[in-house]
Image 1 (cartoon, rainbow, N blue to C red):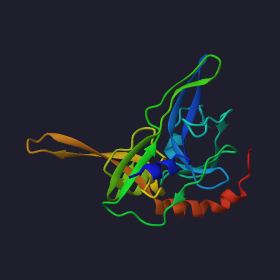
Image 2: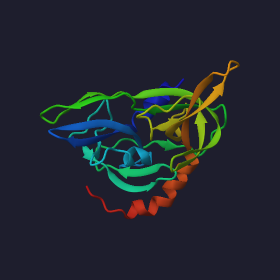
Image 3: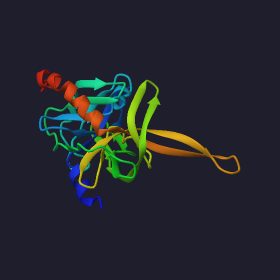
Image 4: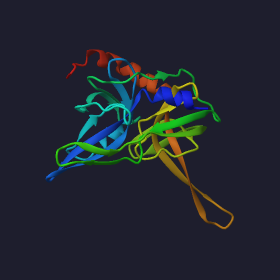
Length: 233
């Protein structure tokens, strides 16, 4: 069902790495996922992916993993952000990927969509500085449950929730339909509890997705800033 759409999105999606000096070595990991919006290297991810990186660390782009590696890795460039809506626009200077197609259609409860991202990485840096490990894409078909306003800390999501959780490392990833059109951005997981007849509580986790309408609005309001932003390439 999603094979063609997955192949299409795989050409536009990438993991966001952080690297932090730690004594004589380095701390390295994947903070989340990003995807490209145009053919100049502008990408979208969740604001908390970048803002929540370890203190003193630097965020890097390593290319279309696991298929192609960008060497040397590129430090990402900040363009604009909206911390309240959890949206972040950045740019990389070269080796960027194909842009996604943003849908203009709102989702409806029951629509089938797919979560995508890079959870469960296994990474380390060798003494010679080379990054080694395993980073794999993860695809989770799911469906839209309902529109919902979710507040997590200082972030307020005018969003919709889906049946499956957004795993750690998938924040900022594209949420797309069977045509490969992006219908939103994975942002978080909200958990609620439901009591059974015996009074025991069952946790029900649902992924929180920023609607594509808010992505369009954010990109449009920052378009002039993007056009005039000086390149650091």
